[in-house]
Image (cartoon, rainbow, N blue to C red; front, top):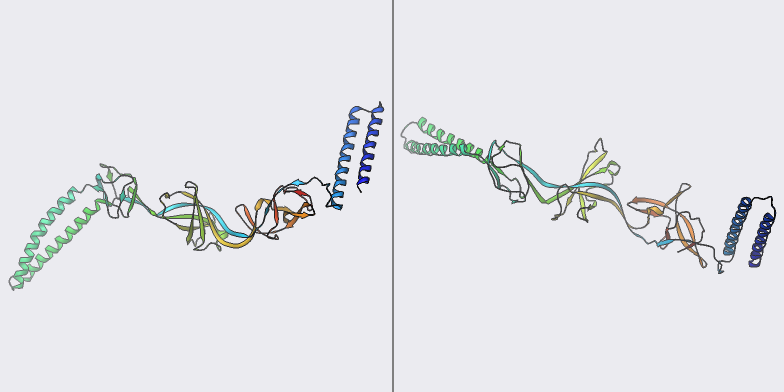
Length: 378
């Protein structure tokens, strides 16, 4: 076989030389035309050489002569755990992130806290002018003291069957009425104190001493960062997949960390505009977490404990089939073999597939343009 090859090549070269010589000897031929002709003949000879080399390599796989092989990189496939998940965006919120406002109208006389102050539930944050109410309280206390004394005397007399029942009842009614009025005024006085409804940190102070304030006007923001949750919206396409208790992987870009948690609430309503439903994830207490931080959320709704996974970019669509290439030994050579696969979910940059076997050497670099049976070099 080999002498035949070289004889054929020698004849081709001689013929090319003769043609070139004849062309040069013909004065009527243009130089450019001769050059193009020679180039065409050279290309044909190169193709013939390549074809013969491939035929020799196929007929003699163990021979030293090898065809030019395409360089590739491979990855040996092994079963692994594979998560089916949906990815979305979310934001961190505090269960206790409260705007505190006044309950009564008036001028703020004193502010007792600053931003960053630790406060406890019921602690007074600011005082509204209550001078008139305090004077009313003192006056009512004096009246109540007199009414109580009159009532006690009338009660003693009534117990001794002295005096009339009307006098006793009037003194009793007067005393009880003043007690209720005093309690009402004292309650009004309590409303002049702006108190924290929760324990936490003062995150914002919007009121100043000397300012007028009215009920409903925000004065402070108090946040308890130990009780945080994450809110996210998920496409309605996953409404039957996402359930309470599903594992969630929360990635906070600013913190450069991942937090593993669980779905604690799944909304029952689909938003008409976005076609999504909301979920909540309770987050563990961490000092770096802040309300309104953004996060990338992966909600895992199914986990394959052992399956074959390939990079999604190596899967090619050819003639309505999804294919990949694996490297197989053929004698002393290595060839690419086409494998038709079935994709069982694409998540991130990975795809779970069926149609491959553990130990297969998947071609991950240089797979573009490969043909089944083509020689490759790892």
